[in-house]
Image (cartoon, rainbow, N blue to C red; front, side, top):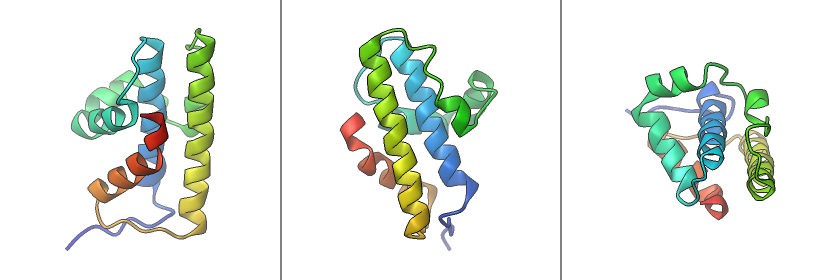
Length: 116
């Protein structure tokens, strides 16, 4: 029997926050391409490493762009933050459910494909 991840489950917000935090760190290092999928893989495969790298794992913390000094990267990240906020609101409004973490990750990646 699969999981039942409802629209108000903390795992949805946690995955979205992980995407933002990991992507921001990668952008600060100068990485481009494969950001969303790579962030989700890193989050799922090395959760302990993720927790160690990001002691404050809150959506409000993820919105901080002070580590991005390049204006293009900062603009890209601001657009990603907005897209994630809209996506979370859409999930909540539509009362979307997921039957597995894989399904959740695939949904997030497909909805944020413009930021890959």
